[in-house]
Image (cartoon, rainbow, N blue to C red):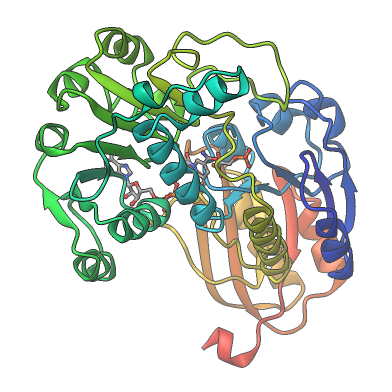
Amino acid sequence: MRLLLADRLPDHTVDDLTALGHEVVMEPGLSADDLPGRIAGFDGLVVRSTKVNGAVFEAADRLVLVIRAGAGTNTIDTEAASRRAVYVCNVPGRNAAAVAELTMGLLLAIDRRITDNVADLRNGQWDKQRYSKAEGLLGSTMGIIGLGSIGFLVAERAAAFGIKVQALAKPGRSPQSISRAEDLGITFCDSLEELAETSDIVSVHVPSGAETKHLVDAEFLARMKPGAILLNTSRGDVVDETALLAALDAGRVRAGLDVFDHEPGGGQAEWESAVARHPEVVATHHIGASTSQAQRAIAAGVAEIVEAFAAGEARHCVNLDPDRQGSAAISIRHLDRVGVLAHILDELRSAHINVQHMVNRVFRGGEAAVATIDVEGTVSEELLTALGAIEHVLGVSVVTLGADELS
Ligand SMILES: NC(=O)c1ccc[n+]([C@@H]2O[C@H](COP(=O)([O-])OP(=O)(O)OC[C@H]3O[C@@H](n4cnc5c(N)ncnc54)[C@H](O)[C@@H]3O)[C@@H](O)[C@H]2O)c1
Ligand SMILES: O=C(O)[C@H](O)COP(=O)(O)O
């Protein structure tokens, strides 16, 4: 594959992907606006926080895969990707420890006012009197919203500090997740309201999306205990910043924030935020995942996804319709138009290829689809060329499956 790395990833990422036989171009300076003009000629795009807008998918001529070198995919227009049958994959869980470490750092910094301590000492001020007041964490209760990869690692770390951890009871939680929670002594609240009212610390770890926008709103903040601490290392739009500012001004809550609504997309910018500069807030520059350990783990995850993809598996794909999946030998990405599948089967018949199993999976939005067809016999280059030439076909690839994989 020809891959464009449009963000700063560890230098060895290029070598690792090249060693797998791919051609890799790393251009970390590319912005969201640059991408549509740069994407032609690439099969894969790897990004961190650089936004991938719909225009990228319109401009692309052979793009099949976008990898978000991180967890959150809200920076990628997955609906536009689905319309063009482009797989969007993330690298889940690999940066979770780094985010959990920062979450605990923010918590300690707020409780002991570490940032203000440091600032005063740097200004030649000794003020033990002012900084001798702190609640301490032992015996406090932390409510975790979003008990996934990061939420669990925060829970482990909090438990080690003697903090009692509770989370939201959520339908559909897997038995593994429930037993892991039980092992950690996590208890469950029946509602967000109960979690807000009974926690000294609330830590937010949900993905951004319509369901989670302003999950922490004025009502939630009003229910929090006086002087409680809100931690948000997930996404800015999960918290209503106007409501948070009011609660901070009223001295009702304190906050540790790594993420902000409308934060800059790039590495450096002039940027003003009333929430970020508030004296009751300890704020960082969306650096939750920015440790060498996390970035090495993410880079390894990117290489695994590329390798799996080259072998025909779209690992950690976030935009395939979960109800329409199957195994693959020939994979044909196409616009979902009448007659395309008939044409494909015609070509297979002409090539005397026998279909064993076929599934057509529609991308979200219903405009494009991928047909995966297990066939008997060797697929020739001529057949692939003929399939690729069919009207409305966007791309064709083939994976040779072993007997075990087909069984
Ligand atoms: N600050 C950073 O640098 C940084 C780094 C990594 C991830 N993140 C953010 O953190 C988020 C979580 O990451 P993760 O790796 O733990 O993801 P994850 O998918 O493992 O966990 C998310 C959890 O939230 C739960 N959830 C979803 N909607 C919910 C809702 N409405 N109410 C309660 N729970 C809900 C899910 O069931 C899941 O358990 C990411 O989506 C990303 O936006 C930020
Ligand atoms: O979702 C994520 O993984 C984090 O927000 C990390 O983003 P970054 O790689 O741009 O730091």
